Length: 180
Image (cartoon, rainbow, N blue to C red; front, side, top):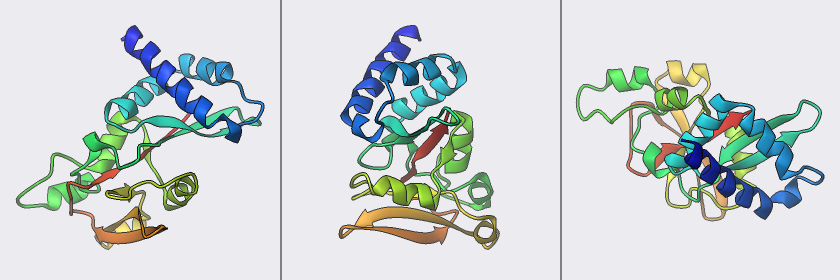
């Protein structure tokens, strides 16, 4: 486990250094220490990496000393696809059930799904989900009506759509958010 943690820290350090112009005055040592001081969060980050998310620092607030990591994989993480939105939707399916739900997997990983606002912010940093799509945190009113939202980027623009929460596709997964 320790070797895996060291390997992950090296990967995240390299990703951080590629985008460190976004974080003037913030050293990798500070970020690394926060990770090492939070073993549960480090475990979540390891799960984000293992499932194909390529996590990287998305934001840092020096006032609250808070780091937020997002999945930066070009496409929705491979090991988090073919999931319906939540367990209510999963249990409502009578046949052809997927292997699970995005919300349950996120809960197991101790991470959150990106919100619609998070997704738009991520898309400002690059082109993500050009071939896939990602479930997004959905408001309770839409969930109660049976739907859920997801996003992707097509034709140079970010789109947010809706679908029945019980639907699932081989190209739809979810992107994780982790606050430390």
